[in-house]
Image 1 (tube, rainbow, N blue to C red):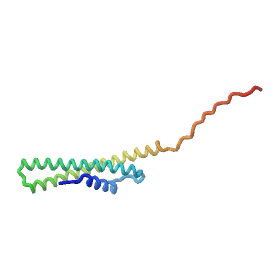
Image 2: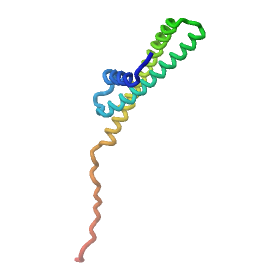
Image 3: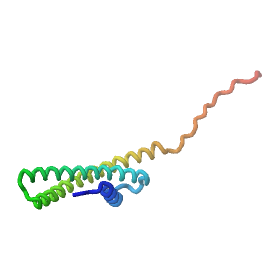
Image 4: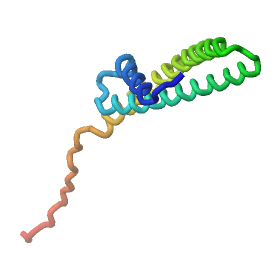
Length: 132
């Protein structure tokens, strides 16, 4: 199975953009950065899992004297099961990460972008000028 890493990342990013429950109030740059970062991580994880599954199944098939057709079927089946599990795990993690990022953006909006405080003016009493 040959997977183009850039195509995979772009596909994951497209799914994330369409389906992640990212609040609409997030700034566009925060939304884009979040999707890009986590799509890249997911693509790396998927590619790593696919390679690891293929290697493990090939090793097992070689020791078990399984035919090439059976080996291919087993690899595809194992990859699908493990990728489904990985997708569920990633989805849960992303929900947590969205909540965390939402809290961060809210805090930034409250504390970093508050209206400027009124300037403090110190009023010094004037020295008594002149004598009566």
